Image (cartoon, rainbow, N blue to C red; front, side, top):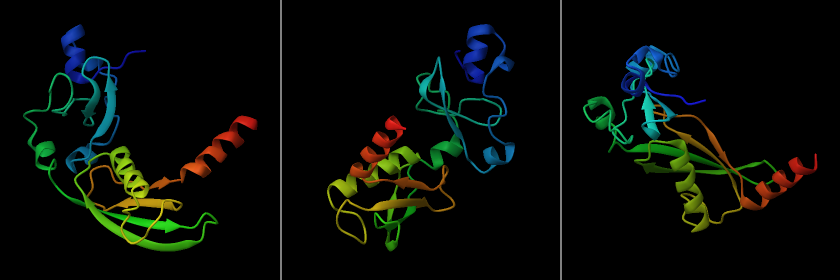
Length: 163
């Protein structure tokens, strides 16, 4: 089933209330400049909506959010990211920290994986660590994320297939 933001719903059906993303998050999150990343079938995979389902992304195919100053103000903001390293046994090892301008957790995860592959992780060498990623609280999409080393990811996938 196709999902549409408020603006695309209006453009296609003439009724903005047919949006599929209404109340996808709280009004409080919108007031705190937090948005939800969704796939709108008309504006594409870079659609970001507020609590009403309105696309506020200047990066969507329709560039709905060009005028949205709240989003634009956070584009070049730097955020601290705390990295906690664990041994494969699960035992805590050490921590590191770095700054990023990345807004999405998948971008931060990719950035950390790249640092691990090039052995440039802050506070540690190597790429065999389990890494807990924790952006600072003011990051617009702050939630913890776990990076599992490739060799262990393959074991997990193999285990799930054979289950």
